[in-house]
Amino acid sequence: MLQDFVQPTFLKRGDKVAITGLASKIDNDVYIKPALELLHQWGVEVVTGQSLHEEWFAFAGTDSIRQNDFQTFLDDSSIKAIFSARGGYGSSRYLDKVDFTRFKNDPKWIIGFSDITAVLSHALTLGIQSIHGPMPKTFFQDETGSSLESLRKVLFGELTSYQFEPHTLNRVGNADGILFGGNLCLLAHLIGSKSDVDTAGKILFLEDVDEYHYSVDRLMVQLKRAGKLDQLKGLLIGSFSDMKDNAEDFGMTPYEIIRHWTQEYDYPIAFGVGIGHEAKNLAMPVGRPVQFGVNENSVELKF
Image 1 (cartoon, one colour):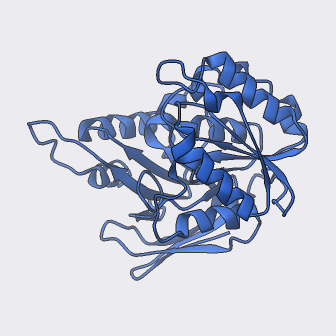
Image 2: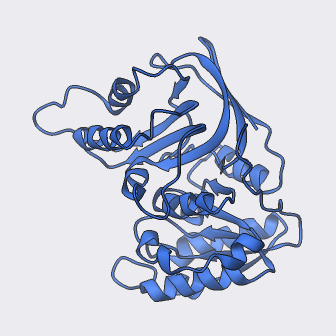
């Protein structure tokens, strides 16, 4: 029996949402103003955090400023969704100081990816669904508009399924499970913390950016040794962008590394799905029950 995670109320026109800086700093003129215009077109009211106008080294203000913004929006019952302006680094620095009491009693959508994997994972440990997907900094990087439209559909309760192209490394099969995942580096980083999610029964998705091939290997070894791969129901592998290799070739690509460390299992695996630090970054409802099917000709994820 699948664990039941609470689904926040889907958005409707007239709802209020917030944009805040949970991690790295951001240029308001370049990213936030266009995002505000877009969200207004979706018919929602938008409020913004002080952190969007702050700068402390690489961060969107000090830890306390970012924490206070997040706490304010979590506790405000009129706010129905919280968008992280961008990822980068920094959300886990203050996560244990955030009081999620009101959030648990009055859940709302939290949206982000990359470093925000830490926040989404923490929300799932509290039993609340969230959304791994485009943030204001990446709203317009997909020229097709499909990523942004997928986010709108998740938020407004219109998403039914995704179809992906087959890949030579795929492993066929069918499974039901709870969708969970995010940035590989962050998921390894969270092991042993309060934000660590039990992956048993999950359909896990992974993506990463700017890592060396041996680092991908090390991260996969960490997941395996921690038992994170043993009881999965399925695995989706998104983009591994801007990967690097040392002068001495590691010998495997990131996809081959992942296939190597999962070869003893029999659950379905799909590579090359549109998730991660590329133009295509489809919104994934973390904590949602899904049906996952991989065959020789197609890959489907049904919600």
